Image (cartoon, rainbow, N blue to C red; front, side, top):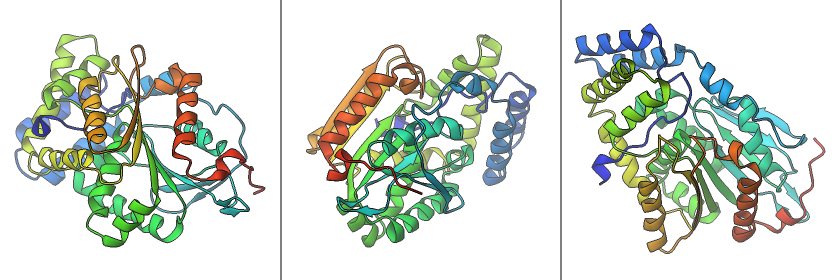
Length: 338
């Protein structure tokens, strides 16, 4: 099962593959080259990043913040932005934090809607920005993971909630894989992580997911075939450096030792996510004693759950936060005067 399941850089953005000559060029390039995996990754990553993203921008252009929430925004690392909504410590104790890992094509405007959901509930938020290259070449995500760990260990001493969306959950898994190598990090996560929220987990067989992406992008059999073949060719050429690394990450995600509880949002209409696998992950954690809450919808696409069901999404999140109770400050949030 683990060998057939992969996380995917799932999103609806045209930045994955779009109806353009880039896909055909990538397919031809991979077919002519069977060595130099790292160079291939850089070329493919560059190709993907250059493709038009209008589809994604159109889908999410209305995802504005539900409230105008005062906050101070600080870039604290190459990939890290800290959003301070509240003083670090008040009469109610240390302000809890969220480690937010959005999907790889999220705009700042879209991400802020989720950040503000936590800000109005008494949290400060550390957002981790990743890119497609962190998935296409897994080793490139290791420095990012260590960047996050270094910041958490030195700067965040309060209760912590993880919120991973789409490929963001894969990035979090890379962070876990680095954390378990470090006893200080292990102790930190056991002490501080109070809850996990996962939205639009990307999972399914390699071929299934490649087909899913192609069908999402095009309603044209020829182009669907080109995209699917391109993806499968790349992973075949780079298997040792990609697929085998994904398998390790998947196992780590299932074995996550820092899951006292979790809230999982998913949809049967999400072509990038196999609902049976998502449910299997939840059941696996449940058998290990974790408190698991799952909310399934049948009409929302990938990373569109909050957009489609904003009220219920926020209510479910609020109920979960009330359950894990990371601190009494949640019930008397005071917006920081920053």
